[in-house]
Image (cartoon, rainbow, N blue to C red; front, side, top):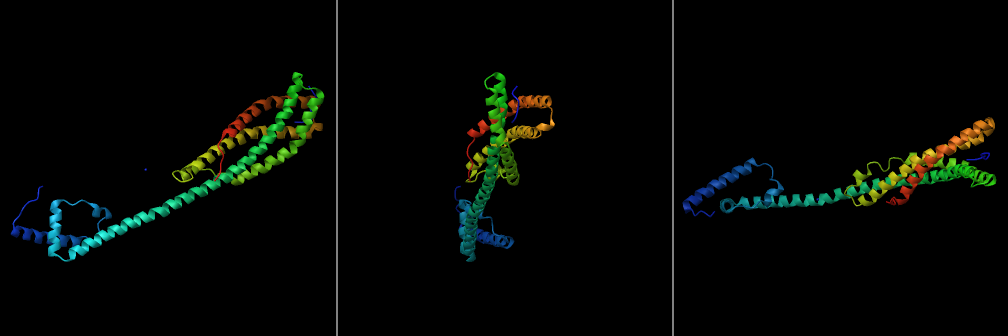
Amino acid sequence: MARHRGKARHPVVIGAGVLLVAALAVGGVYAAMKADDATPPPSGAGATTTSPSSTSSSTSSSTSSGSAPSSSTSSSGAAGTSATSSTSSSAPGSATTDATAVTALASCTTTVRAQQGLARAVAASARDWGLHTDAQRKFDSGEFTVAQTEAQWAASKARGPADLAACTRAVKAVQRARGGCDRLAATTSGSSVEVPAKRCTTRSASLARVARTGAVVHRQWAAHLAMMAHKQHMGEAEYLDRWAGMVEDAKPALTAYRAAAAALAKAPPCSA
């Protein structure tokens, strides 16, 4: 082993006398109804289809009482106002819903941007940790010479501190912006931004997977960088044995991360 350095009905005809009695009776009932009915009928009542008999009664009532036509006009006017009010009030509600959805989407895009930053940071760590461990494998297989192995170790090790700093900053940014995509699907359902919201939640989920798998890789890389920094405090045999274990552990971690990164590459973009 090379020395390791890095890591949606008929109408009824009735006599005139009977008609007069009926008209008076109907007028009395109508007056009683007006007295009992303190509140106007629902707006839907104005749209009810009248039968021939009710039309006849209404005509008689109008003849015997001059106030009936004005009452009828008032009722239909009230119904019309109610309908107009209902129609006009629906638009502001819809606008409010859309505004809420747009705000929620903007919050999610902020979270996604932070996640993208973390994805870039872990990609750098995965790159260098992969190169570091791959150098050892290639040396073991005879593909690399000692000089090639040491050169790859040195190059990846040199980027190590920057990898650690980038991940630390990215993790803090994600923590500040976290939760922006929570409940986004429910908030934007049926709104004008439902489609882009779905794209953002899909991408956010893919980014979360990259963050989980990338965190494992980054921890391994950070641990090896620390080990190299304290190399002088370890015996050679202990150091090489621990390094060999790290090389083995890196393979499944890098495989899981690379699968997540490949899925992210196919995820839809996210924009408000």
